[in-house]
Structure formats: C-alpha cells, structure tokens
Length: 193
Image (cartoon, rainbow, N blue to C red):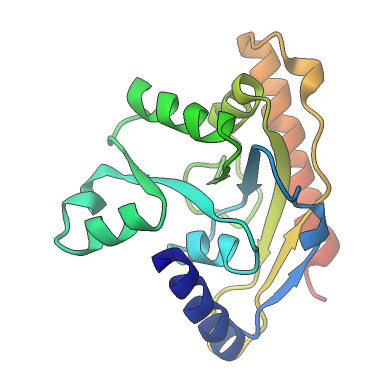
C-alpha cells in the first residue's frame, strides 16, 4: 500500500517538476523475474526507475540508510534491502536471487556509481540475472534533473544473455558488456530528443 501511495506521489512530482516522459514500458514483462539495468546519474534514480511502471521494483541500498530513524523503516516497506559497504554480502545476493525467483522485479545500476552512461559495468547484475533466470531490461535515464526541464526514461527491449550462462568470469564480463552496450545505445538514440 505504501509503495502504491509513494508511486502515485512521485508520478505527480516527476510530471510537474521534470516533465517526465517514459518510453518503452511495453518492453517490461507483465510477470516473472526481471532485472532493470540502468545508468545512474542521481540519488533520485531509484524512484524515477520504478515510478512509470505498474510493477513494484526492489532495490539494494547502502546499509547505513537503514540506520536512519524512520527513513530506514520507510525504504524497507517500499522494497529496499541493505547492502554492506565494500561489496555485496552473500546474504544480499541470496535475498536478491530469492526475490527474483519468486517473480519479482529488481532495479540495478551496473556501473555501481553515478555516471551518465559511459562507465564500465560491474558483473553483479548479469550474475543475478543468470542465476535467477530473470529477463534483463536495459534502461537509459536521460536529463539532469533541472527543474521544469525534460527528463526521459527509456526501457529498451530485453537483452538476451543466455549465451553466457556458463557463468565463468569471462562469461559474466561479456554479459555485462552486452547489457552496458544496450544501455549506451538507448542513451545515444534518445538523447537530445
């Protein structure tokens, strides 16, 4: 319930403040496990990623955020779960795979840090998708969150990474590069529109 209320509020805020335009929502499967892989430009990206969608999006978030009174409880209720600083713990990975195998959707920023869309991706998103059998949907966030300037979010066609299911380090690197290439292509195709 809290997620639905928050999503409705963010839809209004993003429409008014950033003239949010969402493209490609039809590329999101209506059910089953999905990993949304997006570029990362701002702390506002997590709510932006899920706001235009009808399905709930879960996120990993820094463990320190859960220590903030009220805020920690709030982000837990809307589907976030903690990741310890210095890397993703086995417990976080287990929970992410469990969520995906139960048919949930997760939002992941493969670059791991804020970057427009040109950074290198980390292997976590590809690994989670391959281990859970999730569909990978590349996403490009375009704009700079300037008030009353257009923000665009583009959900691209799913990226098939099944050829890299061997899950060796090289397979994961190739799968990650395929995901990042799709994100960069979406960003390039829709920037300036």
